[in-house]
Image (cartoon, rainbow, N blue to C red; front, side, top):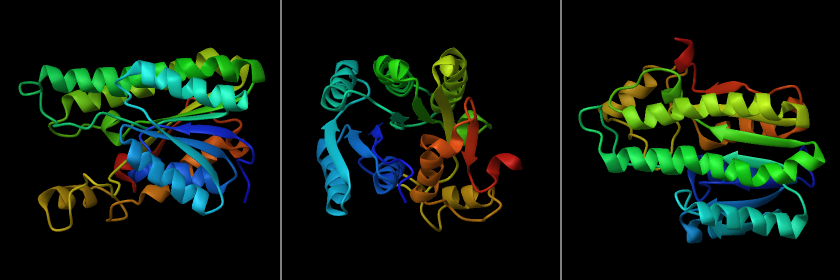
Length: 249
């Protein structure tokens, strides 16, 4: 299929997990993808996998806590193609999660500067390219932790909830330019830091889903392709849980 034929996409936090799956799925649908991640080598490996499969992709090392790196990556794509059609703000700061009494200043700073402000800087950098063409899809990866209470994750949950408010505000402001801004809220997805089978964390997760399992990154990527494509042309300001039913409980 070619639902994203000739679209130009940027995906952050894409060296593995959900971001890698998003990049590969969008490339398979015909998009060019700039794969960005704090791990430049990891991003290049994903881009190579895409190219080896016949797709188009490049890689760039981007630390979303370094806002100059974000702006340089966007400028590189814009200068090469003259436009940007899709931005997936997927990268997030993943550190230790604590309650209010134990959350450190470093933990708060990582979540705020990287996850929240990194999304702002990436979005602000692509908008001048989307506005003139009267088209764009911005997809933000939040979490069910921004929708429902989860234990011991005050900084992460706060920022993920903030991303939902950010997306809705942006959707309102830029809807007249036909720029759509939507949120995907993954539940327990099988990534490198997920709790493993047989651990209390794993049991906690799967007993809260209707499907009794962790999701796969490709299942989140499918939602991202839908939001990036014309199939979702009347969808903006939405929050789509990909969570096995957790938030419907």
